[in-house]
Image (cartoon, rainbow, N blue to C red; front, side, top):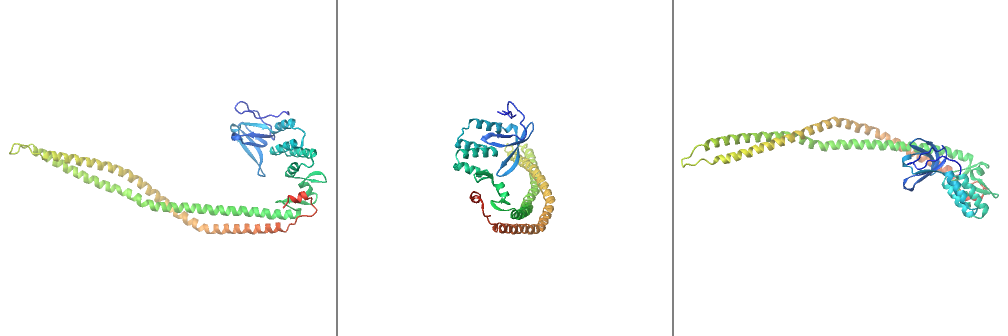
Length: 358
């Protein structure tokens, strides 16, 4: 097995991986990623991989990686135990393609066809790899077309001149799509900000009477306290008078009984006064919060009204720009479709090539 450095079990050992080495990164949950190691730090590994025809680089934290295995080492193991049969060679070719080893995949698919020239599955894999058979030899579709001044674009075979024209319109479409997306995004942002500002204004309008009522409750609580205080003072005076009268003996030899009622009324009046004091303290706290909230609303409302007015002025132009961008995109789309419609399949091409093109 060829010597390749690798990252083994991260819990126990970390070994530096050679840059640009084809590896398979095993992640939690049974997921794995195949690609080239482009960079490595003490904590991360960056892998260049192809996904849905798009090549990009992903960076993974080493602490989240179960293990990293050299694809080259895996290939050597497969190669050593694969028999020289068409089916086994095709299996190895498919494995290679799944690991992004396209050159070995082609070699083993061709080996399968050499062992069985009528092996349909092997022919399909060669076509998947982008090869066609011309006069008994497998050649790249792109190379074959290039020798005849042809290219394949968007699944259509055309001349290089036609492709250049299509490419120009395609780039124009890409630019129009970008402008249209930006226009839609700008309009959506304006609508979002406008809706938020209006919602805040409406909220303040509904909240203000409630907050004002909270602020006015302090005055009501103060009046209630003043009334309770007067009742307590009156009750104190009556209790004192009753106490003085109770010390005098009536003609029948008994003391007056009005003192007990006066004392009870006095106690009740003082309880009411204490209750009124507690209510006033609560009202003072609520009123303080209400005044603070009213100050916040008075501070924010002018800015919100100004924001609504400003956005209301710029929105019509943003809508016009967005509609114009969409119209431009639609016009470019029509031109691209028209340009594609007039392209005819070149004659004299191998049936295998024609069958897979639009």
